[in-house]
Length: 190
Image (cartoon, rainbow, N blue to C red; front, side, top):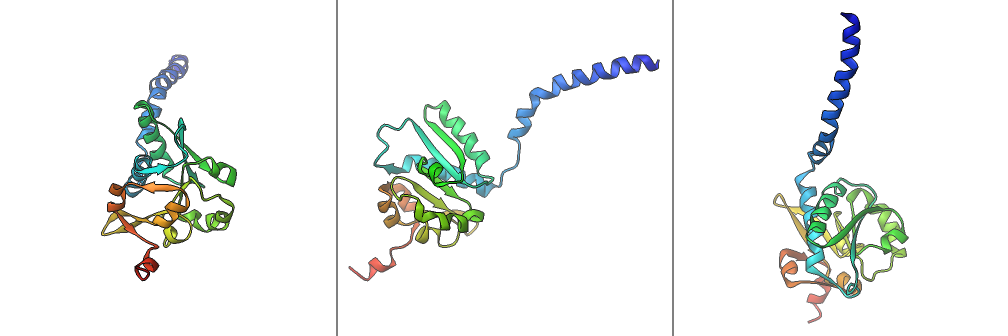
């Protein structure tokens, strides 16, 4: 009886593994992502439609970089696969240096990386990179768009002067959704 258990036990384990291994990708997709993080990922993907890049007439692959590591990478990569199925190629990568950032059309800077990015910002050319953050004052210091939370919802702060400096243009639809920042001085010059 004991010898039979030794034979059945390894065989049973192998069968069990053969059944469970194909289920691993399904389990990986069920990883919980904060709804706010998912909403920010949706915004980042939609910026590809509502922001115009002057230099993107012939770009085949659109690059979105995440400075450092953040939970937003998972939903961004999932959404980029869905866009690839519809014909738009979007590459999502974690970036950590100026050379990698220069290859991006959109750069997201998580709140945890704001100070490190601020020190690196003077080395990054301002043209043709939409820099998006999520820390207090980001759209008036280091980027053009900032995610904020108001009344329990994710909102956008947009700095049109920073967009212009980067040679980017936001659609009127996107601007209607946003809180415009960095324009207080202009109010007194009219």
